Image (cartoon, rainbow, N blue to C red; front, side, top):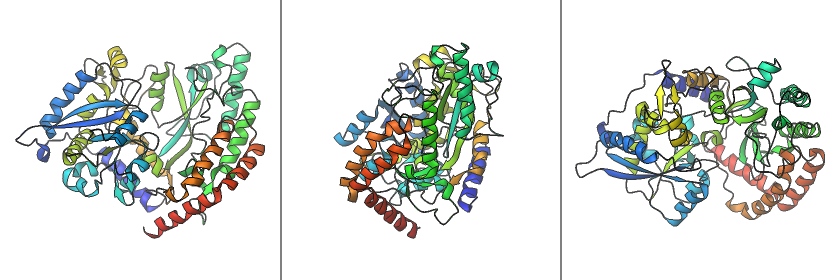
Length: 499
């Protein structure tokens, strides 16, 4: 493990073991002429929580007292958020990531403030919550443009097994953290067993396809790469870390780490483990014998609560630290905000005050949730129905108390276990690198269109990669794929030379 990784693990462990102290206000006290009103555009969990106003009132009592700021939360989906940016709407803070309110694009467009220097003066305690390498992931052109959410920085992918079926009925024991995990290819016996259970009438019609997929395909097929650009399928394989090819950008579908998975997925499709319409549908049933998700040790409790049936989980990929994983959830300050310092002080409150963070995530104690003797949060029926925002979009995920789940033994110290597990993580040299496609935009437009025609079939196992991958590559090369690959490599080489 390299020096930067060691520094990350030690920093995370020390930060998490330190006592959680409530933010005392100090420099964040409101000015004598009144309270600062801030607007926070937050990711949309499907609707505005019915009890948002009541929870916000309690939160504002604290934030006014501690940092002299009152916050109005706007729940926007991705399109509405992007429109708010381009239309010049008033806002002070906004959720952004690789997949929502596209961070690198919006930062380069000038919507997000450069907070590099302001962090040290307005919110030093906020900066200290995370090690330098994490802040590097929030940089564009060497400047910090957003606040990463302190959570599972390193991406890990899990198989999610129906516990009643596999453990109780079939007597199978999927390997589990913190002691063991499995590989992608080791899933096959579980799929075979689940299909047999369906044929034998042990599970109903909803279990006919044990690996039911939608057109987005098998989640995380390219997780073995630090992705430079997904539209062009460009990435750096983690398997190359420590070799002479560690800084070489490849086309993922040409690399065995990706191609071999596509081949196996097609075999599973032919075996009847994957639904025939996977490449065309956009909805999936709630119950599937085996699901896939990006998560962390302890996420079985979250998935069990969301799906309504107990699950056991096994990690098959990661932990991998990348710019994309760091940018999986962040909050940016508006470049046009008149209250940048107040917004940063408020974000410091969110990311250092556990009492405030628990209310922000779960709602009002005694109404939306109660605390168990083990220190876990037990969400009430009112909480489930009337206040369920996206917890990962709000600030330090690991600061908030851990949620209990029925039928699952939840570890209240799960985040310490997660951060300790990062001692085994892999990382490329691309942390903080962003590929600027401006000079190859014409080629990229054609590449996107070609990739989209092939992608759903490949990642659902529907089409044969031995036929379709070479055919797709020929079309992509005619559209300029190699020129894009060379330009990405050139920019990355320049990035490395300036470190």
